Image (cartoon, rainbow, N blue to C red; front, top):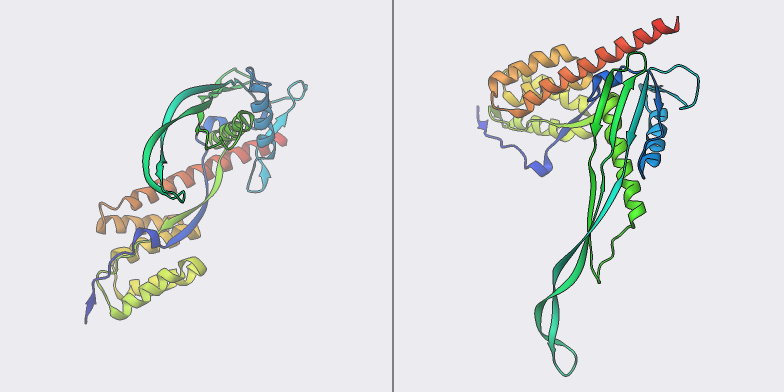
Length: 306
């Protein structure tokens, strides 16, 4: 039997399987909150940031269900927590120089004969938004979320190059970035990650190597077909490292996490230095934590409604 020593494809052509799953909020105590008041923040940009956060939180959903119940600031309706903060934007301008090639000698027809580097005066504009946020429970005053977020935009404006967007538009974009950070901080997120399969075909003969290559090509258009090919190869060449890992990834994609863990552990014995395996353990641990947190929250809310 001729063994083909297949090599992994170049990084730019790496094949992947999509793994869609729920992952926990960065601050799990904040994610336990059910109803929330967003106060009008202090500072020049505070009002705009609080309105943007209130809108995002009101529309935020998990498994197609609203996650937070937003209570108006002056309402008498009960709420679990209050989100408050302050936000100011700072604009700095710094004088800088850039180098340009300019023609310093031309012929009689106006054609440039010689160019030299010349310095031109420009201005670096730095816009920084640095909001401070805090979420506190109303019943006992406990702080469940606190963060200072730094968002910065830097651009160089020259006589021959405009800024692209003005300061108000830049501040609006930075507010949007800050809102996106808070969203990941305080609520779980359903995310679809493209995870690279392993592509080394060491230990496979020519015919098996070709089938393995067919599986790689199928990952995008028909991932189940790719997994079926690897499963068949696994029965022929048990313990081939790429196949073991890829079958673990197939199980993870299907949500069969116990099977995925068994196969990832087997892959780790074959590839002890493979970082993708530790990343898989982290993903599965996070998925289980997110699902447990979400189930506990839904159970608690169901009890409150009775």
